Image 1 (tube, one colour):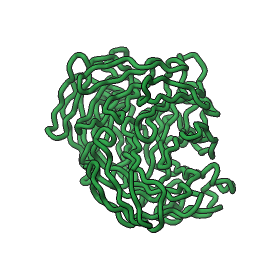
Image 2 (cartoon, helix red, strand yellow):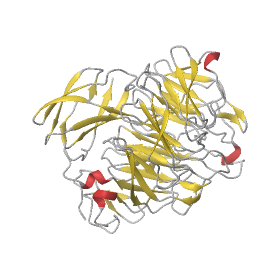
Image 3 (cartoon, one colour):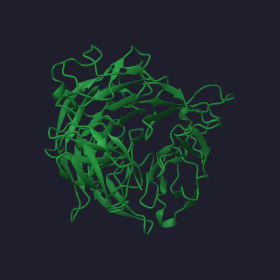
Length: 488
């Protein structure tokens, strides 16, 4: 087995955790001889909890949490933990007051704190009670503290939170309780720690965890469940109907923005609760004169509840999901979408089923953490996927990079070898297969050998302020280990 060169590798130690070391020629990894074509999975390792929500943070830790069920007369505050990427150690990140963060929205604030909006009524003791809350909470990764934030205008269970160009977070969708939607749109301002409600023109029943993304032109796009897309103009607080998907409505599908944040990709799902899962895939170019969804090559495996991760080379990794309902007929093989050829490649299969309540997070070393799912014996474990690009040569190393980078500002990046590409990637914030914070920003640069002058993002619509991973890719597409850069 060829082992990629990495300063962060894992030596699997049963199910007790991971230790730092070079990637071993170990039976814990898929020693197929085809790693450069299909990648490789680690063995499952214990996380001590179900990663139903997962947020990568700039201190190289992943914050994750789950619900607690049981007798409604006892406390049901969420189990919250962090997993350290470098040491493999998981530890509690207790909130310190009664609150269930399950089914909340979340995103990164400009200073790197994690904003959690809404959630579940902790007094019920039942995860399916579907009772929302008005509360918000903020996690500081530096001192591991939680602080209550301002209340929302409505109780929200299954809301979506979107980081905006003006540093605010918009919270939309979700429900107060089963069958009672939360149609208002709230705006959280981290500078003043205040919450306001947008004008009535923004009010719209968007459903549960609406698939909403910030486009590079400053608009928002909603890509499902409904067949017809919607655009939101934050300057006017208005929704405008967009093009309809060719397949129809897509329940439990996934969508992401491709590199550059002008094209949306959606795949999988089902038209109704009783129709079979689909493997169909569509792309929308929002920068086109007349945007319209068009079909492209399908997945090999139809999927519901799959996770999608955009990788440093611009490809999209589909992980987990299954063909029937929330937990039946799981798909364990990953698939990789190439946005240039618009084709999918089947990759190596993981051990665990990762369907409903699973998460997938891009790590700073170019690998992907797959975790969670509230079914199966491995629900409290994680697995690490090394994509094929890690087996295609030696990694470049970033030896110098700026700690902060301004819009259209220049800075120096030094690598150990010449590189072909650089990108900034916002850290994943995923739950229920939804990640509105995920975005890949191409970096313009000029080079003299291995000294590069980079130019910061065009504006805050291309890259909202906050922490990003800066990856440099070699001529064979192998990414470096990322450096954290604050866009400010």
